[in-house]
Length: 242
Image (cartoon, rainbow, N blue to C red; front, side):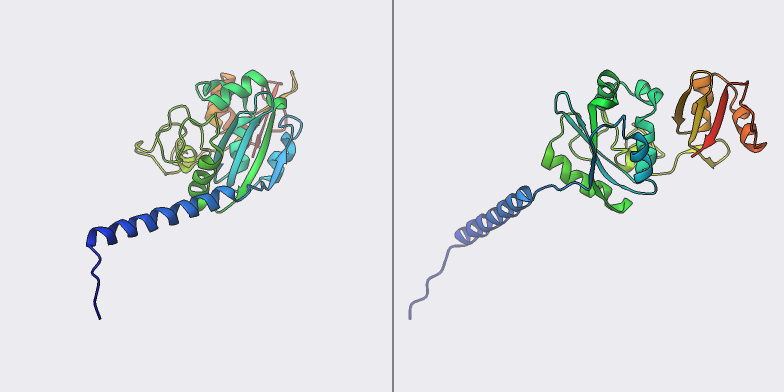
């Protein structure tokens, strides 16, 4: 019985071809899987309170959609409520106007945006799952198409651990992936400020940020909480920890 020897080069070619076809099939299969969101808020402005209450103590992937031009932004966060509070903070948007999504929210207004929760997941899975949605949906407002890519022009990916730890400072920052601190080693405290004179309520990610915005001493707000003060500060402002 004669034996036929197959050249090594042919074997290598067949193996490479098999690998490529297998990878292509896997890619096509994943691409064809429909993306079914958890929930969608059709009007971000009208649904603000529900957005914040529904996503308390939750982490996951979200998507902003501009209802005027259809452009999208995808991000992730290990604290969705806090992330969304930043988006609903006009001072935060103004400070980050260089980011497409922030600039667009200022230009078109919350009522012209819908907010979708694509998936809830554990914090350690946020980046991995966000990367899948970035590749699948190719959102126009995201400059970086992978969560660990350079952060120029990108928020969030509040939406990623990079943004959560040090907003827009990138993974080379010495505090990358470490919790932010304010003052003598104390964690920053998100607060809500109500201007009773103008009937305006604004959220800030720290006491210091609120003090700077109001042009008052940070210690004044701290004492307000320490003394459990009931009367408005200077007869105008009330503060609430979130």
